[in-house]
Image (cartoon, rainbow, N blue to C red; front, side, top):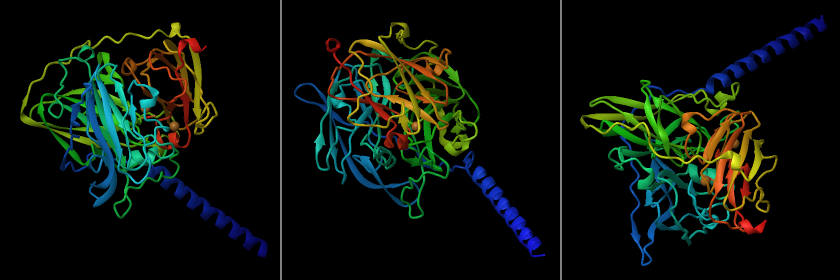
Length: 489
Ligand code: C2O
Ligand code: CU
Ligand code: CU
């Protein structure tokens, strides 16, 4: 009798626990999917970051000023404490032309040290703003370099080791546009704030009191995933479009989330540029996926009087079972385009865009392999005293990079723009046909990247390469390289 009672109690307990577990499991599984499709009220005009003023100094250098500072910003949750450059959230758009010598006076008005990195910029390691070029509170850092790369959509953000995720999440970021008549196409929309717009996409999450919440969701493994999208800092944004073609410079400035951008009505758009410049040819696509740090320039054709929504569809992260815990099942409405009834015509996007000289992988002086997994690269975490690679000035290298765990990662390198030579042994797709500095790595698919170390040998100052999911980068998923002069072998 007692034995039977014990058995019954045991069985019932097990059944109840299983039920609870299954229930909890189902809840965890289902709650990891977010959709805001057709649910966003687009009631706020999209903020367009102003172009940063600049002046020429006595030596003819173009001088910008940026000041990192604290403030509060309205995301629809009251006054949220944030940070920005020269304002309370994000920073102005810097714009300079190839050949110009620029100086940026970066003042730190924060209560802690920061740095400022020029993501995608080809420049000397000492000007790069990596983890070592700390700017103490109350001081100013003034890097200077000559712009020497094709027309492109670049960006800037802090890089203090272990603090990058926080600094960026709080609002420290902005765009840097490079102009170069030789590698731009006049037929593309190019009037900033008229037919050519920065679209800085970030996901945010809030505490009940309106503060930014940067905690990672259960099972995420990649850091914060927000339920609210801000574009240029605007939540629920609409953009009044006055032209029948509009160029959107998409920047994924989110900490962890990848987006697969497209339009709600499924229309195609012309992809014209990737991280480091325009593509050789336009690619007509209905989706373009961007992982954190990546950019894409698209031109979308719109009809007078219509409204169309830029949406992010579930990105193919390549981690089937776990996609949903990394935002891979989420659909998010991003930005509404409201086209005026009098919208004026703009030229067709040409088929061929710019010459992108192909880097030849067979001429590589060196091949290297990097495997990303477990918050480390080749099993090693970031170590300031360790240099992982020393490419020789003037040489071309092939870096084979692979994600070897089941978590989303991407690969970003400072100093150079690379070309993707192959993806898992195959020719790269059209959207990877141009210059890149950041590329998404689905698990177990090796990417071969060709890069040329043409300038700026400095054996004593390192550039970084890392996963651009900021929580991973902060956790040490980063390595260092120095470019050494040819005679130092
Ligand atoms: Cu955008 Cu090393 O980073
Ligand atoms: Cu960078
Ligand atoms: Cu990663």
